[in-house]
Amino acid sequence: MKQRAAVLISGRGSNMAALVAASRDPAYPVEFALVLSNREQAPGLALAASLGVPTAVVSHRLFGSDRAAHEAAIDAALVAADVQIVCLAGYMRLLTPFLVERWAGRMLNIHPSLLPAFPGLDTHARALAAGVRLHGCTVHLVTQTMDEGPILAQAAVPVLPDDTEDTLAARVLVQEHVMYPLALRLFASRQPGTVPPDDAALLSPMPAEAALRNPLPTEAAPDRLLPPGAAVP
Image (cartoon, rainbow, N blue to C red; front, side):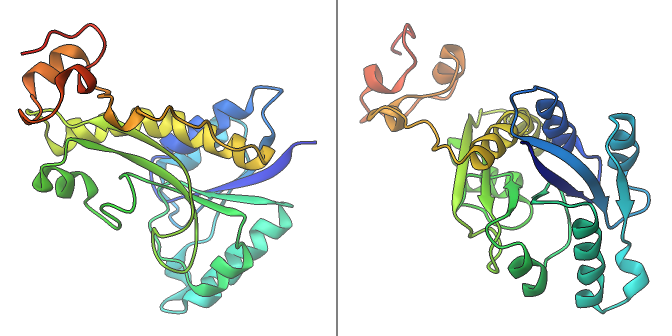
């Protein structure tokens, strides 16, 4: 029997749509019972409705500074929909201990960085400023400390020399749409993730031409760090 899930959104809902699309597979272990937003005008609500998923709005504006009351209303909506798993997907509200504890071990989030690097906001700008060669996304369980819950899955993308925040964000988003449905499937099925080979950390995910335009330090061993078939500069 499929587990019932809800997605909490605040914006466009692209990760929500990727999750719902994955759930159309009869073998997928999750079905989506609700898409809930704290914003009445969130574009993802119309998208969810077009995908046939029930929607709800619990506006934080109606509760003023009473975050506990707002989250109690969210929790009531989740319970009414008989939800078993909650997926945060661009939900732009910090959660209080009440909702985190209510759904402890059953609430997932996707974050646009390779945690523990760059928790919080502005991850792409911070990655570029730090000069990292790899960036990516992380699916993790939600705990009371922001972006520090147990990691369920990660996907990495190369950072290219001419990247901007927008180009890097777009490359990461492609992987978010792959990684979140995969992580949720493994989580709901209680299956472990795939173990990478021992030398995975030494293999570059860059296309050969990108690796040549963004050469590694000269002391690195290029035959191990460039993709198979790439010419060594």
